[in-house]
Image (cartoon, rainbow, N blue to C red; front, side, top):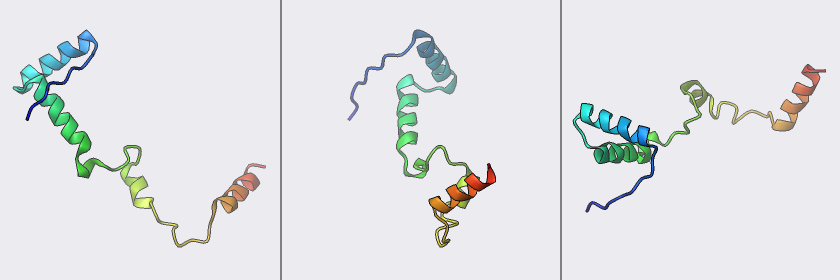
Length: 80
């Protein structure tokens, strides 16, 4: 079932969206729907601020005995 959605956007952005839609052979509604699907898809649920390198480092020190207090002490000594 299709339901109408009203969006308030700057006029210039609307014109750009219409131009893009015409070049893509799609309607603005289809482009918005595709974008919403992309935003909510399971494979895109990774934190957007994490780069592949950051992702590869996650959990690396999980078994380590290091804690925030020890790291803070190390930084204080380093910058004295």
